[in-house]
Length: 327
Image (cartoon, rainbow, N blue to C red; front, side, top):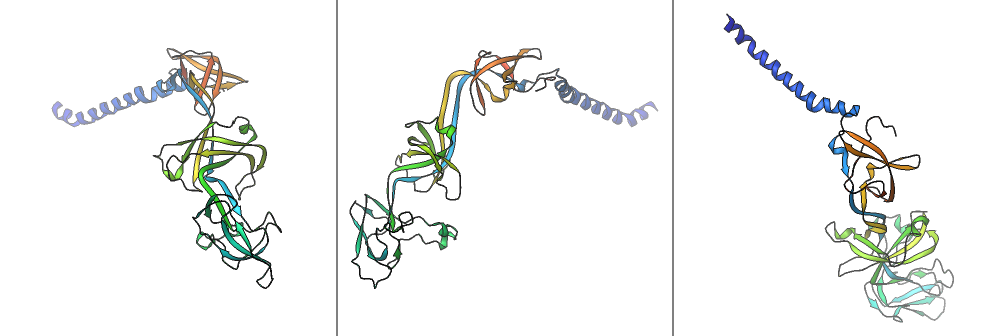
């Protein structure tokens, strides 16, 4: 009788024992530590970091488009009809080379002597930029070729700003990237400062190139973006080719180190807490205890803080507020 009863109840009893073990384990290793942490009884190991020697850098990050340092818009001085073009896109010409011939006047019946257009500098012949109306069209519909014979060209004598572009002469031996920076940023820049350049078209595996700042504007101006009304100070970054095939118009990511501290005490940025104009950390002293400690800081970026006073190397601090601290 007893044996039959045991056979009937041993499985339910075993199940209850296993369930109790699971609940106890969850309590001991899951729920209890969580409650303890919420109550402040336990400081979790992942919330403790050490003060270490390292470096802190303040960056200026921007984006820019590669351009030729020399990019000259060639126009006719008198307005007139284009009669001849002696070059094609891609030709390399010397200063003084005859590029085209224009017959002054509004039509071919006006009896004026044709006037040649000469290259104002050495360079490579490229097409003119599309005008604002062209940019509204689909790329396949845009006309980016050299003007056709018989085209009327507005001359610089009549309208300097809106003179019709015949072609451009670029010198791609030296490439530049124009940037527009704020008045706060421009005060931190100097000619000759190194610049890290990532040419996006070269791919993620390509090593960044090192350029330098060659020009800093002294007055604010409208940015070169035709779709933007933003203003800034123009900064030119010279880009070395280093044997790489870098095309005009490609996009780049720019990084400039504005300030740098090396071999200094550092902590993660989320270990620093600010209150009433003062900076604090919670210095861990063991046995689930931490003391609020005032510190002095140097350079601070998004991830790292330089500590100049209040901590020493290998001290431990918390990256989360202890229980009971209001901030």
